[in-house]
Length: 419
Image (cartoon, rainbow, N blue to C red; front, top):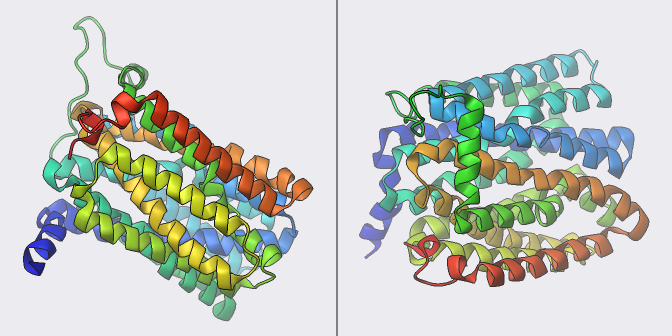
């Protein structure tokens, strides 16, 4: 019994593109996590301000509204070429930070400025990599492939967090960023080998008298989502998770480590790694058994569970109780996010694949108000109160979404629950 399960789990690697894309995404994700941890801690220590930390975290999502246009470009010229260009930019910016760190010319203002440029592009990376999996993977293997692909992000949070914290502590920011640059360069070289070899999928047919334009392609994608109730509801749910859960799970982690727990950078790396270990566990579960879950039901149930566990985490006062909660929260996070992407790819017209995932990335915009509101609210009411309010609000709205769109998201016969 073990051999067929193992063969099914590793089946996506029989696709040539996936064998190159998976390590490319892994290298990119490791670099992302190292950068976020290194720079987040730097900003918090240099400015001693939770507001500046939330601004730094928010800048990483600055380009969320541009994500659909990256999807349009992917549909037009190919997701591989767009992804390579994006990752080349990451490597260039990381090289600039490395040089400034070696010259001891780095300042919080410089970090925020470079982060703002990076934030114009970085939010679209996950959407582009997911679209590239969708264009190369048979539908029957899609849920498993999404689970395996998700391990690139989860393992990066473990290894990238611990490595980033350790390198800065023992070697300084310059050498740490040299490693980040190496990861980005590796990802570019591997991405060149991934994706479809031929032309990009054809976009929707236009009237003969109308010349296709990127804006018209974008409008068609938005209209397609709006007129499909299950897609519209899924996008709203993804926005809700980014508004309520992600700020607590990602952006505010340095604040919890330093202020709530009174710990240091090494403890922060351990906390991030613990959360990622749970996420990796969830990815493995979905890669092996994801086909047994109805996508829409799974995203709602595990999303509500993620918020519920974060409510427990919000009221912990030490790493002894916080780390186990983070591990469980990480598992629930992955098991809610993988069905979202699977649902969107499986139930959408392939001609709109890049645009659908670009619009999906717009949901990340929820991080921006979530983080910016959290800063002053925490300063006024305290972390536990604000975090608890975020979680309770998230669970309540999840229940409303499930109730309002029950015909499209909860019924077993709904297209969104096809396996």
